[in-house]
Image (cartoon, rainbow, N blue to C red; front, side, top):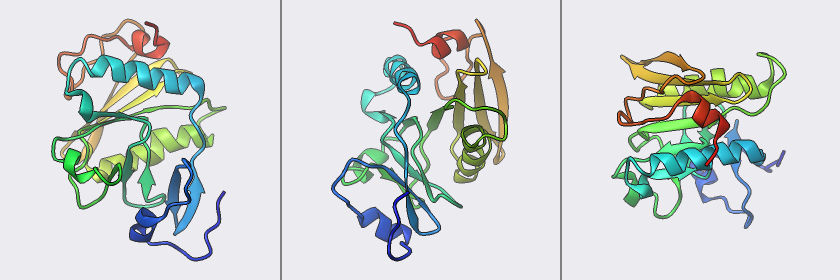
Length: 193
């Protein structure tokens, strides 16, 4: 954990630069270093990006480094995969952050890190905390990709609340954002070329 001498506002955080490649979440004004992704999670993310690039403009798909400002704590998240909107391209030239004064991204995906049980921090973060924050942010589609449970959960925003559909095995994933998608849950979870 990185301790900051004073509590930062989000605007101050956006100006913060410690001249490293570290990523931070802002929690109650303090910087919390985001740990690096596991190799498996990173591979699934990059594999999925490569598949989705075939369906949308490549410059709209951002893996791992795109930051989204959200309500609550932390005040920002780094989804594993983000589908930007056209207007974001000009807005993120200086910093790859989608702030609250911008429209939300079209889609985010999170690959769940290994967890012991449903009380584990990794599980709670992706299944509960991020779900609530992304829903409040108005992100139309959120995928939870859970290699451990062997499930891809597609959450669609319907009248302000997420409705979920679970996909396992050879079930074809149905996506409002990517209607022409031809991937099964097993293909995403196993992420093989």
